[in-house]
Length: 207
Image (cartoon, rainbow, N blue to C red; front, side):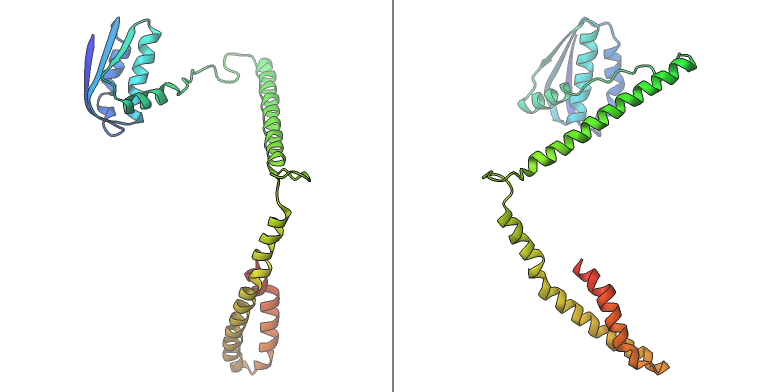
């Protein structure tokens, strides 16, 4: 049986033909031929719909053939063909006794712990290997580059930090003196600026 596809096969439109395609998947056709020559546009959703029909037809022994596919269609169909099929299995402990479920849970937990540990060691090993902090390697980390970046980020930032701290301290002194004069406590402006800038503002700006 030959079917001709036309129009846009995208995420917005494939829902309209999903029911017809499911009918084809469960049908009794021995040969299914799809003509893609009249498709104006296709994305991964449309390609997956065609790939799903191809898998269903192949699973029941029917022959599946595509005609008129462009290079772009072939790329999308090839990407859709690489998507794995997930088969639903029994849930953990389904249909088993309490004793079996307990040991099954412990077994799954041990396997997951082993996989997590192996993955953590892989990440740690990749980090150490990627750093290549061994002396004498020309392609390793350059200590001169580290010192240069520290100079630019730390020493080179001092003028900006000093300027910002000075301006903010001046603003705090001005506003503090204006507010504290109502209480006759202008003498505490110096302490206010010193403690606030040195302990709080300057640390935050430097960070």
